[in-house]
Image (cartoon, rainbow, N blue to C red; front, side, top):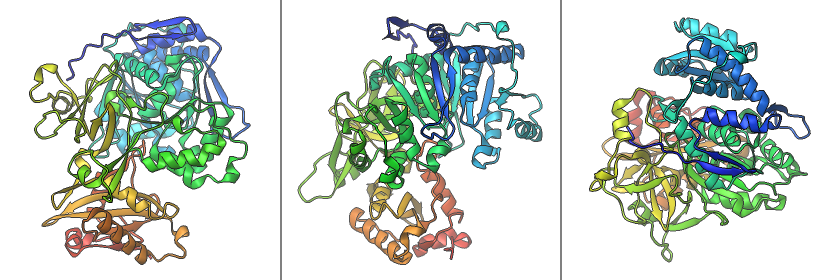
Length: 607
C-alpha cells in the first residue's frame, strides 16, 4: 500500500470564500450548497441540440435530493457499504453520487448495460467483487435490474429507483467522514485483465480536484461542459465533480448524443460559453472526420480556454489538424491541452504549461525504438511526440524507471512512469498482492524515498515535459527492436484518414514474433479502391516505415476494434480475439506460420 500522509492543505479563493482543509468531499459539497443555494450546479441536454431548454439542477436542489437518498441509505445500514450506480446519462446519476457521499456510502459507478445493448455479465462481476449492498437506478430500468439481481442470486442487495421517493431529508445525519474514508470505487476497463476497483478516498478526491484547478487555471468564472460518461474517471472527476470543487456550473450531454452527431459537442460549447471541456484523442479525430462546414454555421468556440486531450496517446497530428480546422470558428491553438492521468491517480497527473501551445517533439525513430529521445537527424526517419505537459510539484512526483532493474532512468530516456502524491489511491479493492507490486514499488538505490505507483505506461522526461510513448505490456519486440503499436496504427491510418478508422497492432509468437495489423475501413469510402490493393499498400507502408515484416493484415468493418470507455484501443483483447478466430475481416492476408497458429479458428474474410 502507498504510505502517503493525506495531510491536505487544500486552499483556493472563490469570490472571497476560502476553501481550506475540508475533511471530505461531502463536507465541501455541503459548504457549496450553503454558499450557492439556488444557483445552477448542472444543466443537462439529452440530445445537446441548440436552442433546447436544458434540464437544470441547482445547488440547493442537489443538496436536498442527496440528503433524501442519503437518509434512505443510512436507514438500511449502508453507511460504509458499496452502492452500485446504474444510470443512463442524466441528472439522476449526479444526485445519486452525492447522496452516497452524504450517507458515508462508497459509490460504485458503472455503465448501465441496457444503454449499450450489453448484458449484465461484467456488472455482475463488479457486484461480487465489490460486495455491493445496494443498486441505485431509475424507474424505467428498475424492473430489469431487479430481475437481474434475482437471477444472479443477489437476494440481499437492495434496489431503489431514485426518481421515486427515497427518504426524509430531515432524517439525514452527517457521517463525520475524514480524508482516509473511501468516496468511491472506480472500476477499470479490464482491457488487459479482470476489472479492478480503484479505491479513491475523500482525501484523494480533494487533492486531485485541487491539482486539476492548478493545471487548468480554472476559477470562479469557469464553465465546464461535455459529453463524457459520468461513470468514467475523466467524466466524473473532470466534468461532474470539478464544478462542485469550484462552486461553478457544468453543461452536460450524453455520450450517445455526441457519437451520433459530433457537432452537438461544439454546439453545446458555443451556446453555453463553456470554457473547459475534455475528451480522449479519438473524439477530436471524430470531429475532424464527421463535421462539415455546413454543420458549423453559427458556431463560436472563442470561449473555449482549455480543451483537455487525454486518456490515450495524444496524436500530434490531431492537435495540429483540429486547431487549423476550427480556427475560423474561434478555436485557438493554445486552447489544446494535452494531459496525462489515470484512475489510479484519481485522474490528472500532468498538463500543458500555461500560456503556451502544446509542445510537439520530433524525435529520431531509431533512437525512440532504442529507448531514447534524440535527434531529429537530417534525412533520418522521425516520430512526432506530443508532450503530455508538466508535473506540478505541489501535486505529484514523477520518475522514469527501468521496469526490470527498477533503477531510475536519465533525462530523455524511456522507461516506466512511476508516480506518487496525495492523489494516488491506496490501491485496488481487495487485491493485496497486486497492490504490493503496483502501489508499493521502490526505486533501486533510493528505497528510503518510500513507495511509488507503477503506472504500466512508458514515457520519458525532457526539460520538465512528460512524453508518454506507450503501454509497457503492449510493446512489440521484433528482431530485437521495440515497436510502438500506436506509431504503426497512426501511420496506417494516415494512408487515408477518410477511409481508415481505428486500428489495433499487436504481436503473436510462433517460432518468432509476428506483427499483426487489424484496421477498420469504411466500405462506403472505398468504392473505387480494392481491398486487396489496400492490404498490399498497408504491408508496404509498415515494411518501409518500420523495417519489419508485415505479413499479417486484416481489414475489418467499423466498430470491430474494441476500445475502453475512455477510448483507449484494447490491443490485448484484440490479440485474444484474433487468436480465437473471433475477428471477422473484410479481407485478410496472414503469414503461413500465423495461419497455422490460429488453426481451425482461422478468420475467413466475409463477402
